[in-house]
Image (cartoon, rainbow, N blue to C red):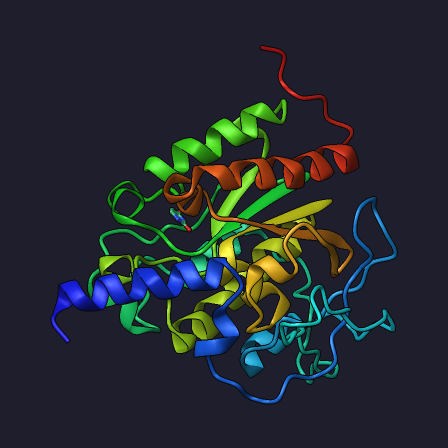
Length: 282
Ligand code: URA
């Protein structure tokens, strides 16, 4: 397939994924029982463990006894976030800090193939004591050039979203599942996510925010260890090691599909309710 066709096909797959159709074209490995929270107000929540690799399993929260995810529509098979058993690995690094994580990544990381085309490692930015962390997918071209997450078009929209919530960008922390730009903005691949996501889990372990907001499928699927399309669980609350976790659509998706902004605003309002925020006055 030539590059253009490939890029178009990938855009369609992303779109299908955003619509929750992912399981039809993805790996159909047998779904396992899922755990999630009730929707709406801050709930008794419990989330599946992020364990796409032994390293990822290192950040796995314990199993919970929350009920399985209920089908939203009888016509559509529901794939639920699988859970895994407790990790064999240490789940918390004593005395960990963001600086230490940055140092551990190193200035010239070559752990995965994304290093080949990157300009800068995009570690994360913002308040190290943030109550709210946004987790995106991976750097794009602007982010790769500037070494900062969400500074391109999607980033500007994210900044507007943050400000609409009555916050400044510097109040929150922003990072990604993978720290290096996937070529042509393709989706990060499984091995790249498995290699890089433990650093994300460590970042979250250090910040311990009240709320984690996953932006888009890649982030949500990585954090919840599921292949399920994001629209099946978008706006639901999960527990991630004591933080409340919610997934919403990626700002880049909103640029392609502005009507979805109203759904995202509903999700942001749920976060605002948890954090006691008032919307920005116009
Ligand atoms: N999209 C992402 O997921 N992350 C960024 O940093 C920029 C765009």
